[in-house]
Amino acid sequence: MSINVQTAEKDKYLDYLKTKGKAGARTLEILGKNYEFLKVFNTAIGYEILKDACQMHEESLAKIAELKATDEDKLTYKVLQKIINRWSKRLMDYENELGKVMK
Image (cartoon, rainbow, N blue to C red; front, side, top):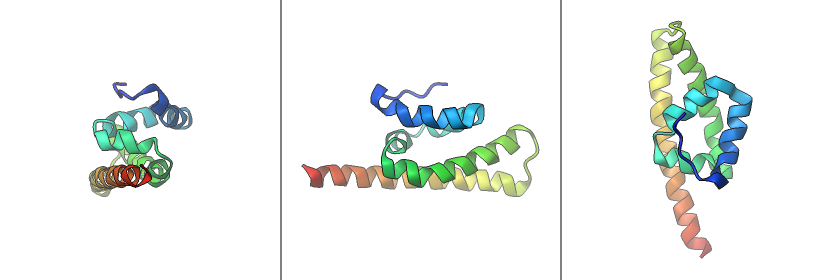
């Protein structure tokens, strides 16, 4: 897996991988290409908001990998990918603005 995260940020990823195994690793590898996702997945609010979408993404990805995906499953995967990317950007913007206010 090629996710590059700081040591302090690895806890959430490791927790997720412990509970999700290889399927979780595939999901994090795909989603981890998005910088905003990497940063916000480790925040408390980001993890809580994104974990359900990640689980649904993982389930869709598993069906696709097993060649058991219907057209609806494939569409769900694409929609979730876009939603996770958008939410990640919004959460990153939120975290950045919160950091400015807290200074």
